[in-house]
Length: 160
Image (tube, rainbow, N blue to C red):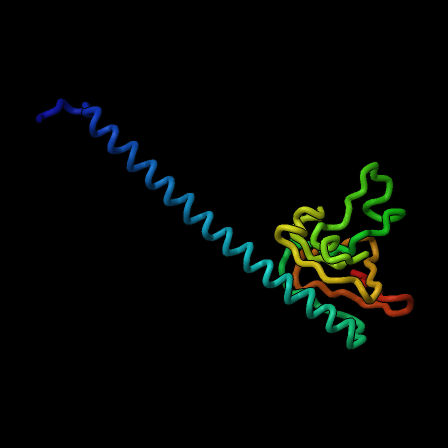
């Protein structure tokens, strides 16, 4: 059929709409795939970083350079709620469920956010059998490399 300039059949419009939906879905799928891969990579980096930090503490090193993942938090649960970030909070966050499930009274976690739920889902925790504490309740890895100083005068204190 011959159409006047600027006219489209409903069928042609429907084909364009379907094509745009397919392209949109493909874009969504690719972005989701990339983000899930990135989250998995960040967790692997967090596991390696925290395990290496514990090894450095076992070897009585005086400092440790955190190289990855950026924008994550190193937290000791339960935190010292009388001072620092958590002081004055009406509802203090509990330890991550992963720590409670294995019966740890305290754990050291590397998490993408500062709440126990994120530590359970995408973070990594180890038993705090060495009595590790953090000056200021938590350390955010804002820029890498981040140098952490390790003080052994009373237990193990991590200082940014």
